[in-house]
Image (cartoon, rainbow, N blue to C red; front, side, top):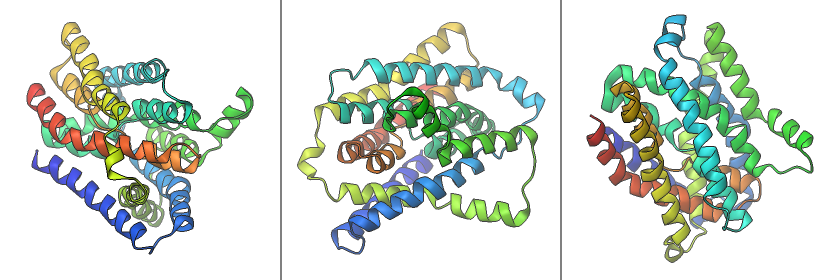
Length: 301
């Protein structure tokens, strides 16, 4: 729990750095746009490739098949929920809500939280659980923001995105277990390690443009309940009913209970979405997760 709280406080400190940089004028609007592009086109693709570079043998495929299937079902369910739960919202907000329902912050918080609660086996389970989410967030998730005149143009736009290419490359490296040259892996790791800091700083820059009084938004609170309570509950109850392994249930529910992903703000800012609203989703859901994540952990262990 100390590690979890430390991670979340670290995120807020990084956001605060972004707020200060923007408020003091050290980074202007053009600078914010440039940093956003750098995260989206360089840092995130490196982070995605690095995240797939895990040991993956036939024995592990067999052992982790249950959590992989469950993760796929959860992603399908979240995609459907994102489409049906927010139909009455205006278009710009609906895109943010849809994407934030599909893509939680499990990619950043998931591994350390799973390891802290369930040990080394929990970390391995989390790595497998995150594979479908990483693919979905840069395919179906990305398509939420990248509108095109027709389906063919949309598909072309999505599959040529650097983050999708990174998913394909990462899957190839994972399945073939090919090792990159030491200098290349070192460079990849170094750039990948910038992801969290730069993403949080960009969110802080967007947050600097918000009126604090506007943070209390009913639709944001509604989303927060869906993301932190309703979705993990939808995972927990069926797992208990079908008698899934306790570790599989625990890791799946805990990662399903993560707050909105930081990429919600990044993509909304890049593709002319409602970046202010997206930032509210990330900040408020992350704040409330300081309460809900420990509660879910106590229920699951």
